[in-house]
Length: 120
Image 1 (cartoon, rainbow, N blue to C red):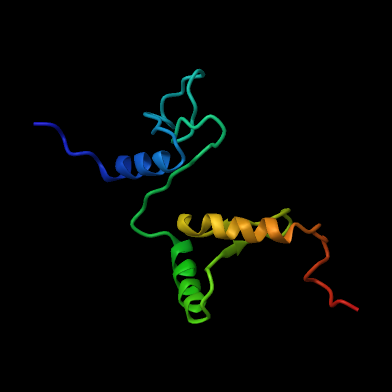
Image 2 (cartoon, one colour):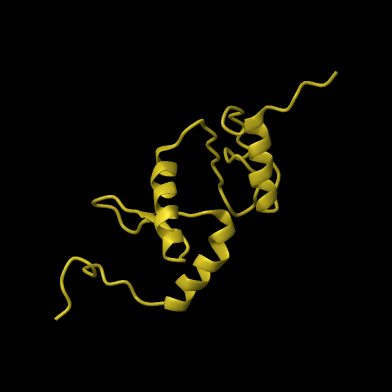
């Protein structure tokens, strides 16, 4: 009888498949120079998959989902750290195309002081 597939391996397979790739076996522990340390074999994306019982970002995201649904909008959490350029996005993969379309549509230059000073 075959061993049941571990849940985290199944998640890694699902994520890899969503990006048209395969799960990388022994990704972090192989130490082989000819293999990627990414969790997938994707040729362009380094995908790190973390499967836990609970992630703090989900608490924030779930609260944002409730607020967004009340206004008929798509939830998007942006996380920035003091002293670092740019920001990270937390979104549901099913909303990626719509959010990307909005980002492309705006296609504006980013002013480093925007949001810190009132417009005159």
